[in-house]
Amino acid sequence: MRSPVFVLAPDSFKESITAGDACAAMERGIRKVFSDAVCHHVPMADGGEGTMQALVEATGGKIFNVRVTGPLGPKVDATYGILG
Image (cartoon, rainbow, N blue to C red; front, side, top):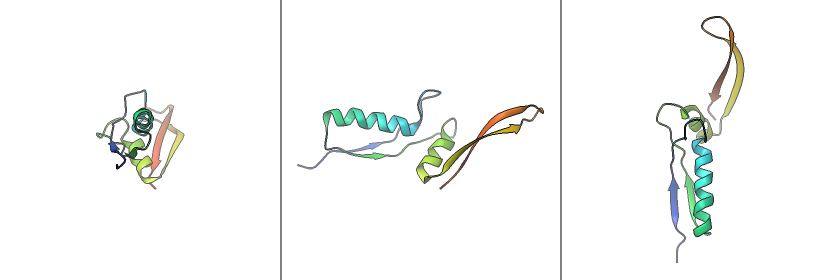
């Protein structure tokens, strides 16, 4: 009998879990029932929160956190990603 195959393609859950972490959680649940399952992780994003994270993770890139001058002058924290 062939192993069941699952495509895990969630979006992030706002301010609580990234799409990549959601894939990992889904796989843990699936493996409790189907220990031999094949799981393909495809983190998704709809253009809003989580899009940069999904793109960077999908390409093996890197995320950077920096302190920059904001549009009104004071320093603010910013995050950017470089695709792999």
